[in-house]
Image (cartoon, rainbow over all chains, first blue to last red; front, side, top):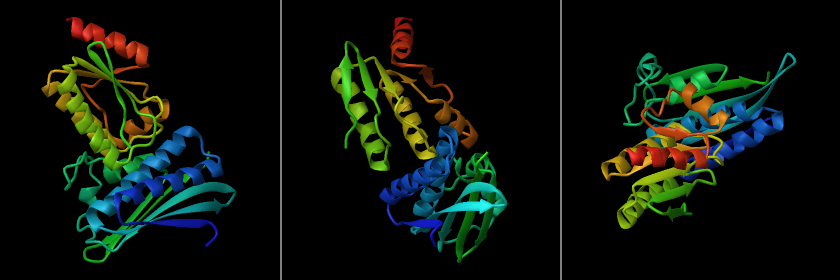
Length: 133
Length: 118
């Protein structure tokens, strides 16, 4: 698809590639520096979650054009262990990795729309969108 | 690539000039502690003027290295945090509490001198 580019996340260098892709698309769409930082940070958190918890997966960046609005959607897909209690991972401070626990609730705050779908044993699918104001 | 650490009198100066990957960040942690040990530095200024985003991993590495430096007896001041970085860090839920900060390198060095003078 023309409006979508993806980066496979297998090692920690791929986290850097995913961020760079996202930042470039954000710039191209006309997002300001603060929103570019929000988008780059959100991608970094999602890509790191894939690397830490699922081992591998992919991050796709999609340009959105909907009823006159322009936006950027981050799609994070993995076939990892999945999340059994989504409500728990959406709580601030929750972490199983000894990190800062800023992961998913932080990503939700950085973006305008956030959707998570996960089944234990099947993987996790997250979509987070930022609209150009 | 390694982050250069410069010595200025009894302080160390670090300017992070490019986007940090995990390995570089962890290597920096080790290098800074070793340099503090080798030079007996009392203070460190880490300048982030060129950094346009910080995620939770980089924030954790920075917070940890500040903590570790304190254990060794050196104070750390972070300078040059950009508006976009301050906004995203706070939205992400990361406060970097109890970390000394200053607007720029000059003010950072002043702050460090004050702290060390006490």
